[in-house]
Length: 82
Image (cartoon, rainbow, N blue to C red; front, side):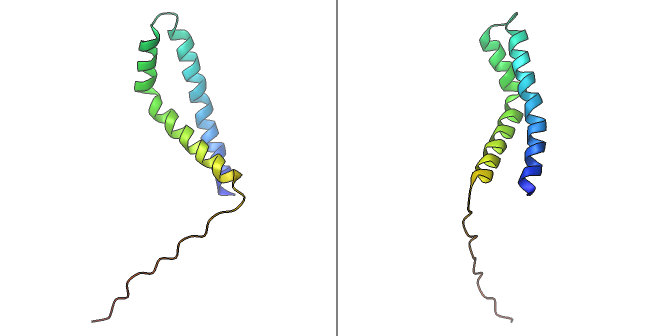
């Protein structure tokens, strides 16, 4: 399935970012207050981390679904040829 190929890509990007976040928190805690660390992570890493985490959770919910809803059939208004 296509979603399985995407999951490899998401994991290959998410795992290093999570390791970087953990390492940054550990090393920065030696020098800075927790509020400063949170601000740094929020400013520089949070957007990418949250995007990848949301995509991973959406991916896991798709993979765990046993059946999918039918796609809606949309009737477009009929245009008369003028």
